[in-house]
Length: 296
Picture: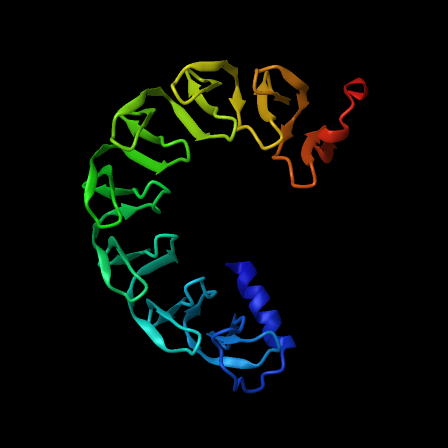
């Protein structure tokens, strides 16, 4: 948020604030803050929607943008017309199914792009809908799943329920242990793990059991036995950062060390194929594509 405010302030200083007279529908409108009020300018710095909002977000693919008036949130179109009356405590981005999560009177529900309630606000919390059409909701301290009509598909019964992943499974917590269910609510992987992360593109999920980390497949079978002090998810290059005896290295999907544990800390590989690593309190970069084992 601070970065957006800074960018907006800089834009406000640099732009020529002339009138925006042409049709805004196809324009790229940029939210800008001036004198504690938000409005929109085009790429030339011309005002298209005058600064009058307590907050203004970027326009979404459906042509609507979140705005705030008198602490309440709603949505406008690119002409500045209020399409959904400011009335909500919180609003989130519209999702691929056309719904946006909103909070009203401390309860969460979903609206469509006209502001109509599709899921009435009755939940204590809600996550975004997954590609299988289900969203995790919290009701009376338990989590379950609803469909896009608001129908309860999996009754609230979990201590926490995460979103469904592309493999059709969702991580859920029950009595302090984590497992994975399918879209019918049936456990595919029984809750027995202390912690877990999402499945990677190679089909493996990193989990913790008895203070050691390893990797399981979507049926819950160990592919890499729990042996690491900490472990991260596999990246697109097929490597995962793991910690062993206080040092970090990288393994492949068989569990074999490709880069021996020697670093004090590592981060994720960047798109440039570089990975930040720490040695003797100083940070540098390694490049897996050109990594030379003999130089270690």
